[in-house]
Amino acid sequence: MNNLTTAFRSALSNYAKFNGRSSRPTFWWWVLAVLLVLLVTRIIDGALIAPMLGFGVFEPNAGQPLSVLVSLGLLLPNLAIGVRRLHDIGRTGWWLLIGLIPIIGTLVLLYFYIQPSESGSNQFGEPDVFP
Image (cartoon, rainbow, N blue to C red; front, top):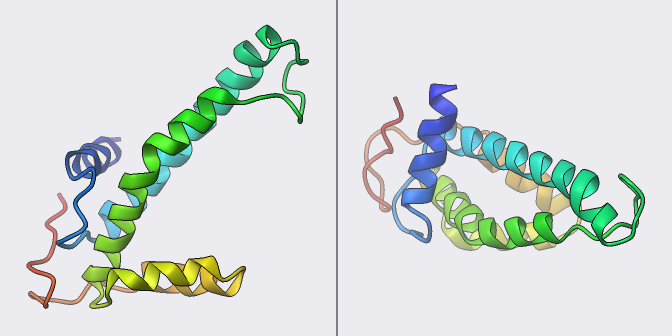
């Protein structure tokens, strides 16, 4: 649990920082933290907010305003940590745009994200030190 909170704080402290590098553990702990936050907001939307809006509990077509707001708030740090992760393997952040290609783009990005970090410094800076 310590790694999760450390990664979450690290990513939020670099909220919109697109330069530098993010190690593989930092990136994947951040992904886990975001998934957990979105799961909690979906549960809150389904159990509390949807009934107040007149929808049934966990109805598929129910409005989910809290989840949408949290997703929008996390958009910039998600992009930033994705770019820094690409920097860590020696690629430019522009490779993030390949994710716009359905299915294949996502698979290519997933492949990039699971690659080991470049040892030592590269053109994007020193490696990220993760506890």
